[in-house]
Length: 253
Length: 216
Image (cartoon, rainbow over all chains, first blue to last red; front, side, top):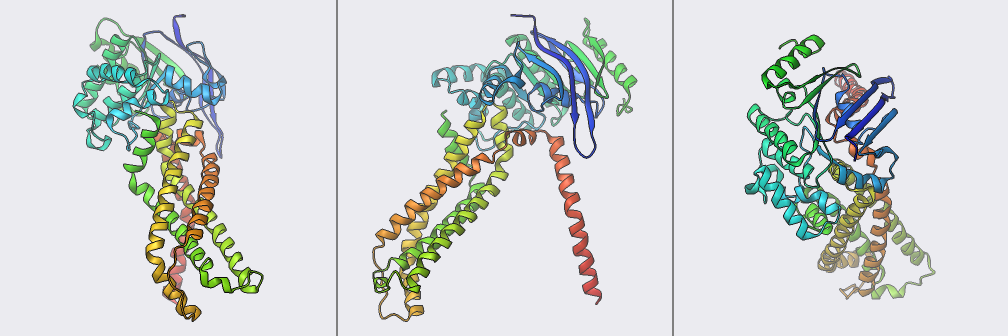
């Protein structure tokens, strides 16, 4: 087992259309096992494209991505699906829960698709649900619960198959500050308890300060990175300073 | 939780997405079934199958069948479009294209069988009334109700085949990339904008024509 879980080399992404647009212009990035990294940058800096390339949603134009020594873009459809449900977990800004299924069924979805035995399903479900504190809403439908609860369910679905890499795209974007705070605390404890690697895109410096390392992007390139020191407060200040320096939509800070 | 459980819940808990598709299927089966009831009526034995009327009957039933084919494919595609985003969620949760196709295929077949049964039951209830109308149109002395075993059998077989083929074809139209792209909010935004841009000229055109007609 190597130390690096995610290795991105010379990642290029170009959107071809009426106007060609280079979203990513050569990104090199390594994510270590058990590391929690935030990606920040102004709007249009390519941070979501970067995450989508890693999450196998957007095929990169050039460059290579290896997750756990495997390049997902070289796999066929069947293997890619298996790869997604064994190695990757996704948390989105707008939750993306299946509205025809209950909370419980949503969480079990990756296991069902993997045809896991019913007994193992129940034991894994119990573990994840207890950890996330969502026992009370298991039988509810997705439209009966609040945004913060939806995101908890989405997180439960993302971690139930114990992925080696958890990807989150603006996980607090649709939440109020209280729910955002509890979701982030949750991410942190998942990171500590399950020893999973986390890559999160956000534009909120407070949310980003939960990570151990923050990388900044601008115009499709990596611009800077900050390691977390001893103090979260100081880390937060450094993030804000870098953002102010970057400009682009952060004038209000 | 099993795979089939998901299929059934998808239908039961999302009735309104499925109802228009279900009703249009029932309608086309019903039309075909009424036609067969008339065509296979014992009184129709009097007609020589080689006569112009006999050939017309056979031709008509073929046209109705082909029409149902097109109609059902169309409503199935419209129905798939509604579902594309939720299929994206399944794919991102680790479903392969094959699994997604299997799921949509089973959903379609379940609806198809429900539609066939509904259509035949409704058809049997309404057929005496229908036959009375036919009697008046044909100015026949008696054109009573009978047990249309042949019509039922043919409707069930032909529409089972039709739904099987149509479901197999339409599941081929599920584009994995497209479904997954819909998960990205910003991309959908762009798509909405472009579609507006496409429609805008037509709206303007209709506005212009409205203004000119109101002035004249």
